[in-house]
Image (spheres, rainbow over the protein chains, first blue to last red):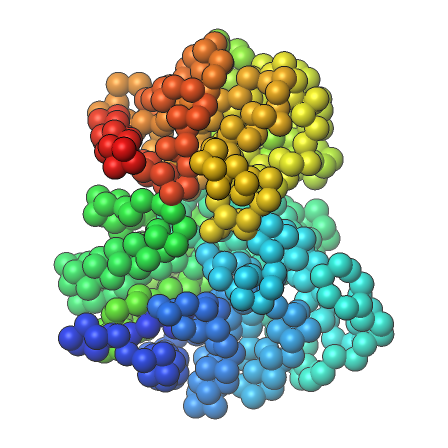
Length: 342
Length: 220
């Protein structure tokens, strides 16, 4: 199996060394630098997840990806994720087809919801309609990717009749994945519509998702689809030592979870739960290059996945800490994972 | 409830398969159903819930002693209450507007402090409703289950108005791997909801009781 390795960001708002939050604008410029640096560090993919909050000020990641595309040659660039349900699939296709043109065929998308809900009220959608919105829009997106005139009608946007949607793709459909967080019916949908599978594993033991890879493979067979890859997306942080990585990450993790807990109404986890998640059976990849590499290799093998995307950064980490993490991930973690996986 | 009690799990999304697997492991015969054709979830059942039987919802419920509601709450509003009449119903659903959106049928109750399970119970007047298995996240529920007496066993709360039904669900909770905490009448189950002191938490029995107690004090 050929393995590839990526980085994802949500545009996590940086702080300076004194802990003062940087502006949204500076954070966005830093993300562009990090994306350019990711290529130099030897990585295969750089993804930006759509968010609309003060601590993740990244609603138009495709614009940042275009800036990165203009300064790189090789690294693939995509969303992680695009909240398709609250967007227009035609516009999403057009934006990423434009990125594909600018980058010379390096665009990808991961479609889903992530843990992002703020786009629904912002754009006038009802979260209770989530399933119908996603199903219809993913179906249309699959049609758009095929190229050629599109005929489509549904409840969630205006119909299309033999519509030529531009820009035309230069070299066929770009890679498109559906992000799944634990709902097996979403795995079936990805297979049925011809998307690849992105497993977002952000809590609990990753190995429990092995059944989902097998479900995806069997569902592709059932629907007469060719084999398609599975990727794993999980959060983490790499520093010189385990102690340093945890010391940098944990206070910011606690702050971020506290913000989300306040918004959503759940209790803030204790440090014990952090230790469990950063341990060998947890979903967080926080530690030295060796610790993180061992865990990635074990889980790629257990899950039958061929790509690992590390969601790096957190609100409140500094740009320097992130650049160090990217360098260690690209220069030390990935080579060790490749070696371990033979 | 004996270990031979038959369980029907309604919902094959995030939560349903997890509860189904836990119940199968505890020795319960389990059927699983969605609003649609069982053929649609045959592959999911085979690979993700091995040992369960996919059925039409009406058949699964008719042959079950206990029905677990594990569908999104807005889909519950489409369920015919007559289907569940006479059944013991475990409400594992949550009204969680910050995550799933606002539902008028539940928002009105929430504004006067009524719990979502009380509204569910009002719709299911012919069923014995117990609120349970709703407050531990689906990604942790299976991983943290432990046999009775294990030193790191955690607690799970439940609440209901029908004593026999509560006893049966306490037994189910115990058998699948958690110390059951009987909170009292269905309205007492409000502490298990989003925004409550134990929602999203996986606590030991003393931690659970302390959290609920401190919450009651702060409200008073």
